Every structure is written in C-alpha cells, then in structure tokens.
Length: 193
Image 1 (cartoon, rainbow, N blue to C red):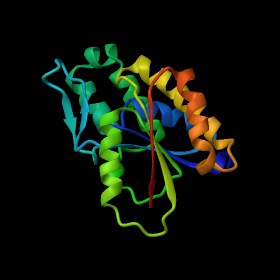
Image 2 (cartoon, helix red, strand yellow):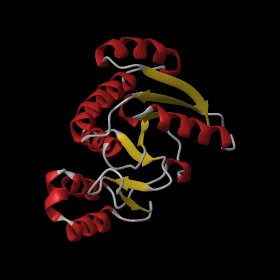
Image 3 (cartoon, rainbow, N blue to C red):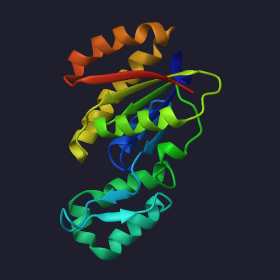
C-alpha cells in the first residue's frame, strides 16, 4: 500500500493527542489529517470546573492569543501555549470528523468514547462506493507525555499497516502483532463509505 494510504487521527478536541500524531506522521511523509469529535473544543482552564471552551471555527492562533491574554504564566507552565503553537504550524484550526466528507483507508481514535462517536457518525452517513475504512482505537490519556507516547505508537502502527499489500486481509494479523507491543487494548471495526 505504501505511503499513499490516507490516515485520519481523531481525539475529542483536535488539540493534543490527534495533533501530536498528525505532526509525527506528516513529518514521516504520510498522508494524514486530524480531527475531533466533540461539540466544542475544550482546553484546560484555571481549574477543572473552568475549562476554556471554543467553537471548532476558532483558529489555533486565536486560542493562543486568548490564553496569552488571560494568563500567560499558567498556560506556559501547563504546556497549552506550546501545544497551540505547534498546532497553528500544522493547520489553521481544529476540525470535526463529522463535518469531513473526505475518505480514509485508516482512522485511528485515541479513546473509546471518541471511537464510539465516530462509529455512530459513520452509521448515519450515506454509503456510496462501499470503500472499506478500518477504524482502530488506541487508548491514550489526554496529557502531553501520553500524547507523545501515543504518537510513537500510532506511527509504529501506521508504518506496519502501510507495508501491507492487502490491508483488508492482513489487518487482523497486524493488530494482533501490534497489541502486545503497545500494551494497550486495540479496538477495530471495518466500516464503509
């Protein structure tokens, strides 16, 4: 299949986990896009009950400037400004998977709730050419360190998948080999466009 495989990486807000993996994969030449499945973009705030909430149409640059204005020390210390700076170098703003009409061979989600939301969305879409899409979940905690580890794991998996000449036949075996290496439970569903 080679590097031409189209890959999507999806988390809730298209900020941390999906963007870290997006960055890793694009640097290695893969055709990758990243998305969120949430209704809004949520970033940590001054306390757990006071997150910063944005619309998906808000650019990473606007979020960066907003948080810089609110509390530069807090958002530098917790790594949010650094993350938003990386994000705005990759693409203008977060995107919702539900709004994307492009097709992918592989979609990797970063938590089971996102996987469920994505499957729900795929079920409601009109099927046209019945092209298969492999939807895979790897649970990755939503913090900077785990996002980096997760990006390595996702990159490993995409590398293994891209070497297959017949992904539809090989994927179960590839995932069986990969699961003990990553020491996380892998969920996998085949869906169709």
